[in-house]
Length: 341
Length: 193
Ligand SMILES: [Zn+2]
Image (cartoon, rainbow over all chains, first blue to last red):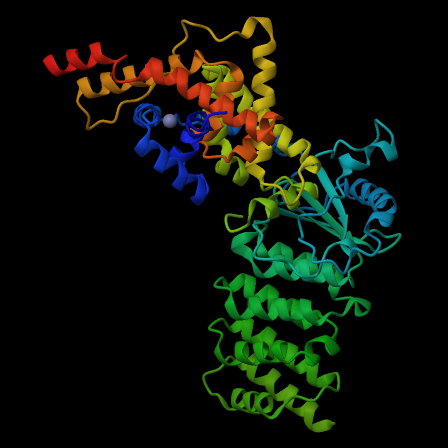
């Protein structure tokens, strides 16, 4: 092959600026000394430039919708507003299937850094195992056992349409269902760390989750007020609401639920106690203060020691002339319980 | 999702979660669509190609090798789709169909300039259709997508040497069709107006 031919074949690479330095040097030297190749170079350069005038065309917007509709079909009737649903059993059964079938898959996966939403345990994927035509009109729905979900929620996933699945009387498993990009239901024991973390997230990130917060609190109370499910993290989530929530009604529910939690939980967590003290001292709504002082009184009554600051706050309340009388009485009651010990 | 690499997004998809689909689509649909449009000279076919390439990317995500470049894989699927399309008898590139006629004109541009640009674009598009499919694929990937010959070879299923020859031959043909001499008439016309 002549040098001219070699150089000419390299001209497009030279134009694309992807020739290695040595070959580039050789090509340029040749072009400068060989008139025919020099001319070819100029016309290639011209052509290359002309080609660049072909404008890129925008992809039609409908193409994007069409694609997303095909790969991520919208949820249908699966998502219902928060209320207790007759389909609870049905979801729980499907979850059971997943649990059984998924067990082998998830064995040993728990330690991996899981995303809440990146688990492959889709019901669709399990279809062959459970037959062609069962309950699974929830094909777009995935049911994940909480044990397969990392307790570390990454980032702040934008979860929507949260629903709660009541405890299954047979095994006590509860569930939280929500839309992420597909509809996800996480099921598990109320004591499962991932379940607790998820509930705590739902409770505290209202702008990211859509059920009414009060309803979420009520649902959480049903389970976590039972002594066997005492849980500090849930208490802390409620304390967070008590501190940060703007709406009085929701704060009342949060503090009321805190008060109903098993006493050892609320008194164990300093966060909870501090939130109650702060509410007692500063909340503008007397009902919130009443519930807060009741909760503190309950803590004192359960034999848990309150720290000096808590005791001080209660004393100030008793002495505060313009405070609601009931609050003052309850504060005094709490103090007397402490002193009796 | 925006901060995740292509490979990270694909790993999520491979795990059964399709939520990165829109992000990947936004990253590559423009390139895929324009490649198919220039290859097939049909807006309708380009739209179908784009759809099917991305659906395949999701449904066959496990075929993607984690260490590969996603763009190379996507262009492989696209090029395959386009070749299949052309192989079907009815889908020979139609002479009459000029997809670029509908290009919107920038508002701040004179009608003459707009017309000239459209004519240029049409001329380029027609010239590209004079190439063999192999040459067209190679020059489109090189000139418009900036892919290396190694990547193009992988997509086309041929050697780098073959890519080199295809691009060179394509340039030879395009040079004849698009050179200043070939456009001489237009230039004079424009100069006179
Ligand atoms: Zn020469």
